[in-house]
Length: 212
Image 1 (cartoon, rainbow, N blue to C red):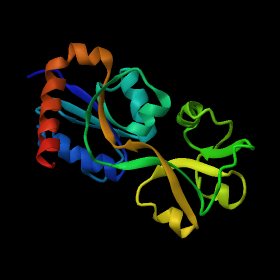
Image 2 (cartoon, helix red, strand yellow):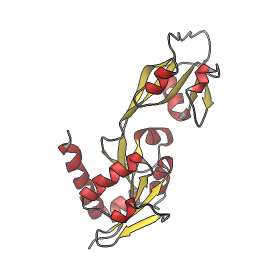
Image 3 (cartoon, rainbow, N blue to C red):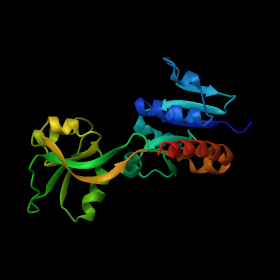
Image 4 (tube, one colour):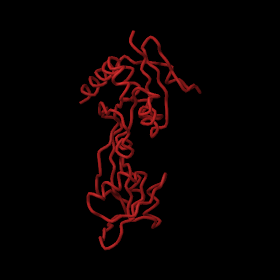
């Protein structure tokens, strides 16, 4: 029996989908999917301990060593740049970061572009490369409202199907980055629990390749 792996998974549909991949890789814990108020789920026989956290918090748990590995959206890694190892694109939870605004919007460079977003760092870097003068408006929810109500000219946000944008007379203009779920590891754990992490990595790789 190797060392036990502490695994942080994002709450929600993505986490449940990824959990099934972990289980298929030999790191199962059926109790983790039960409707319960428990926060930590352990399977000593499989050498695994799971806990569910808010998606944006997974990287923090892994970076600071409370979890050995976890699953994080590429958007979170781009925004916060945590000090951890990105091991594998799991090729699930696919979407994109995009700039969107009202249909027919024209970006006049004579004015500062007002951009509403949950991702200020990504926005600053993206427009910095374009040498575009911007005013970032940091919001936490209902980003689509900003251009509709005149709070911003455009938004930079996650787009999955684009249906919400279309229903509100908005459209995506530019793709900033493709996003999907990534397997990440704590740097110290990758060294001291390398055997267990490599076994998990190989099991997940096989599933990703099989679906292609």
